[in-house]
Length: 394
Image (cartoon, rainbow, N blue to C red; front, side, top):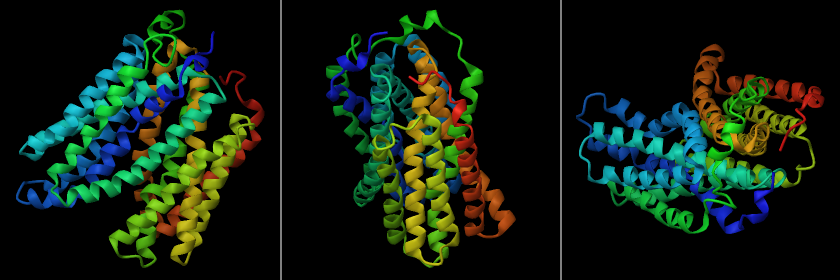
């Protein structure tokens, strides 16, 4: 197969990276405005449930529909799906500005999640079609690093825009229009990142489920374990005496920046085979969570969270690239969807796991310690099984 990466401009690849920022944009922009929305609809029955669903509905849609989006990538062509998804993302994203009730806003958020899923899966599939390893690893690392950065940035932007009013936060989705325009101009339908996988799909429609199952399981477990840095840090910091929401938000921003450093560090560990690289990521995250578990002060807890996020920044792009490399180009749309679904599922399992562990240990630090042990055990198993790495990785 001719390498598409030689024909793909860096500008087009950066556009595809930007097209995958839907999740951090969708969540980060609205989160600071949720208290205002709750106050505005204070008299509505089940208001708290609705407010929670407004935040999680897009991710829930993504977890359920990412595999379906992957099938559409291979059927319609990734470029077509990406353009349609970006158009829908803008329309459903800004529509709540003019909508009156919580129920229709929730419906629009669900539809926004569907559009976001199509954009993320198709842009990721296009990236993987455009180059092979190690260039593919580098671009997936850039995608992960910038997504984390956008997530941190949009939290601040969302807070600023929310001072104008909670409805105004929805208008920020207009910012996707330049990405849509750049996609139309730079991402071509052939000979580059827009090559259509539908032409290759008939040659090989069966997926190597035995080989895929273990790496998809690693994606679920990796996201579940390493999202401690994102989802559980606030509880640990609060228990250590950090009460002000603004300080907690700043501390979590510092912690999450570790994922950016981890994604950038992929270049330094690119010579390692995928399994040792994954083992390293679990070891780094496990060490970070161990620091969090034993921390008696806020600085050590933040340092541990930073290390945990750094491991995540190494793990997720590596696992994604390994998953994509197991299949022929004509099946990469479907596999991209499965990988995305695995990562979103891990995000949902994290609070479920900690709900059970907290009931068992009665301590967030104790729960994090148990998960740290799990991460280090997985790291040891991956180091021991490094010779079982599948021969096909690109």
